[in-house]
View 1: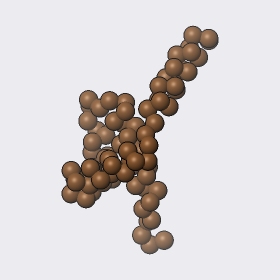
View 2: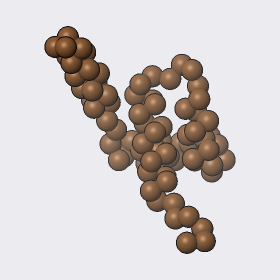
View 3: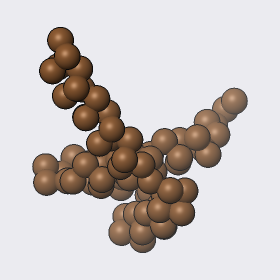
View 4: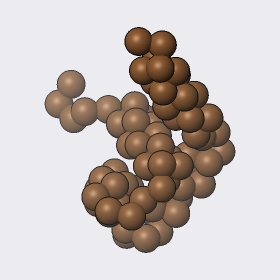
Length: 77
């Protein structure tokens, strides 16, 4: 059990170390908007489907998606 836990701990530590700053999220949001004609959310979701993404890129794109969804107010509410 100790070995499995240490492997799990290393994975968690690695993922936490991949955190992104708010400035990185803003910069990537802007870049996605440029690359995808203003469609930031769709662009991030599309780029997440690529097979050759680094863990850091996945974390950044998911942070953009979370940030974009948090700022977007659903219509009709």
